[in-house]
Length: 222
Image 1: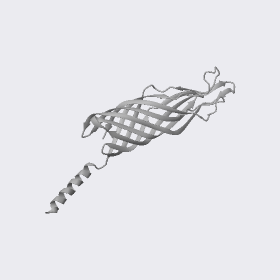
Image 2: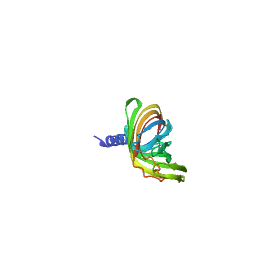
Image 3: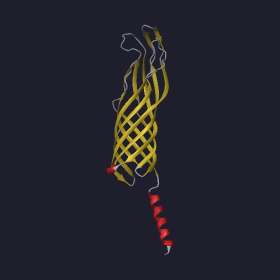
Image 4: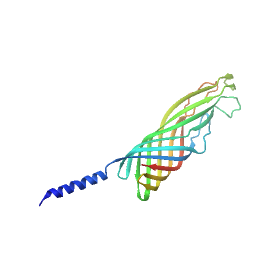
């Protein structure tokens, strides 16, 4: 029996299977509209002045192994906005602060394709919250201080736990990629909401806030 042709055919088949199942790089971009709610303050008065609906962009770059993609997640949104006061309902004239928080999500992610074009994905990592705060010049009249204080502005950033999960359905599949409808949930630690104390000084915040969100959007995978 001549094993040469049979061996060559076997090697060719194995190589073809290995090539077909070889890992490949995959990238996904999600665009959506996000509605969020933030945790309540137990100390200083904080009012969430954010838009009820914000724009969100999430991305996944990873390696596909069959139905599973493992890689890195990144996400950004239009900012959160807050108004803060030490004790705004006291009837005294106290300093107040406007702050804008830009959250950036970074983490590891995995996605699993299931039957009928449905897929699920999740990420776990951190939210880096970049904060810019400003407080106008004003005349204070409270139990601790009376007098003028100058305007102030400052910036800071914090890093907190973040995670999210998405459920998608592929609407269109072509040789150029996949288009899907997506619904996702997010949890972000957004750090502290800055404020000024009764003397007008920039205070050290001691309470961390979190943000829960739901996002509706579309995704493109290539």
